[in-house]
Length: 425
Image (cartoon, rainbow, N blue to C red; front, side, top):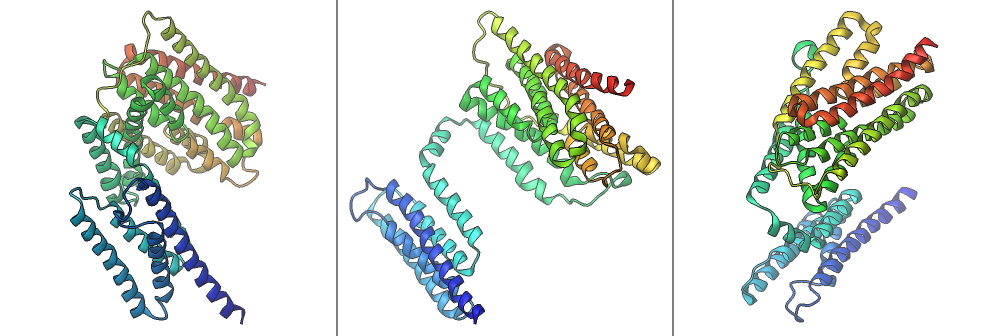
């Protein structure tokens, strides 16, 4: 009896959600076209609401009366197509936005009627957002150039075409390489590079580069550093800002790994925080000194935009280094087993500190004493910082990447000194 009562209630919820989603799209379309003459619009708030309701009714009837559901969907879709045809006859300019929005409204209503509430709501939210961003998107198109279009196309190729097609099964020596994970390194580095370019266009070169470095380092400071080092090779880029961004990315990394250790390996946190804090302070001091030197420079103003919005070479180099280091970590694990845990954590942490913390957090309780656990996390962090310094210098040269590399070196030393004192004590 309860199940029989629950089913109509669930169906009613689906139909109600379908109507609400249709009205939501209708509100946006009605507001956007509020200046149009009466009778000239393809559909208003009521029509979109009814389209959503029609889709919801078809979804609820799918199991009990499938032919009726098909007829209802086909009739509603035909009305949308006829409305588009009539609208094109009355005006010289042609826009399919309203009709496509109507078909999407019908579809999300159908999904809601089937009970897929999350997908229906998500698609509606994305649709309304896209419709509301009409002016912003048109403004972007007016200010974009051919090089930026080419950069978008290349990034779409590597991120949306190549990445999903790559297998994720282990291959290579010791099964150390997963093609999709390796290519993800390329996507991340080139993605941060392109995101920095876009941020520089919108926020100004100085604030855009720094904001992208700080935000990107919450994901991967190694990828951010490689991206910035690639930009340093461009003579038109403000080297001081790029080096300052490298230092800022390092500071954010120390904060991120400390938070991650607190969440995943809390027993290591007290000792690890004592090591991470000096590294973060050294990075911030380096950032402040670099920015101060730029402020003292004569005529220091807004940094110029990089000439190349999409540079894949640093990404490919980092992927090659990733392949070499993952093989080295697997070799140590195969040869020495659990006795080489610290070495494996250090090698794997060179590229991804988070993986070392996750590995340590998954160890059984009592495997390592809290003090030892905190000390074990230092080698990955210190080696990762040194690796980023070496990456910056190898990609851009010491003359261009020196300030950022020196800051990273100082951060690694600052984090290591307390560890030496703890070991001696």
